[in-house]
Length: 237
Image (cartoon, rainbow, N blue to C red; front, side, top):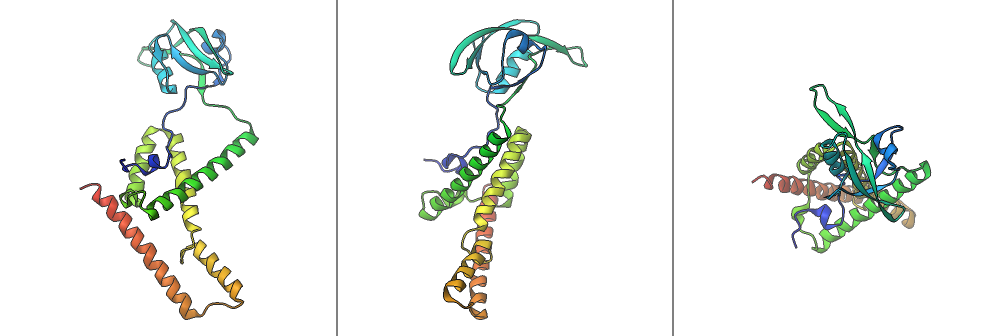
């Protein structure tokens, strides 16, 4: 099995296309007048299969002032609604179809907090699984990326939109936080480990031993960084 995409291998994806879920419905707009409601999932417009919100924009923009048959899922019930598409005219005089809706699932404050906690837990678990697969050989070390690879990924994600880019930044922040808590000297996790050892011994480690430990940790982290940069550079040749 190909291991070219470590995120996909772990089941982690950055969502770069929104689902076709109706968010807010503009009062008096074409969608409201036709009976579309928040949280409706659009599955088809006429004979066109809808997979993402962008598919809706593409179809609707091409049929101003026309009536289209929307196949939707509402509260686990499938139904069809004829929708009279509205229109706007841009500065160049070209006419485009509009619905008067936003996309996305609305959540209460409590639901948003729960979702944030769940995603943080999920990404932390995926990070540990990634490390485990690397250590056990179930994932090739060529999947390890350094600053160059991360910058390239960030650039590609930014082109997909603000939300995917922010998601990637959150993913990287959580992953770095988890890595920082690993019991490796020079990292915070290593410092906590040493403090735990000192608490069990009832006395601090000697300065000489601590120097050896921190030096070894610094060398290990440095070698990993060099290896990651080498992987980044090798992808371009």
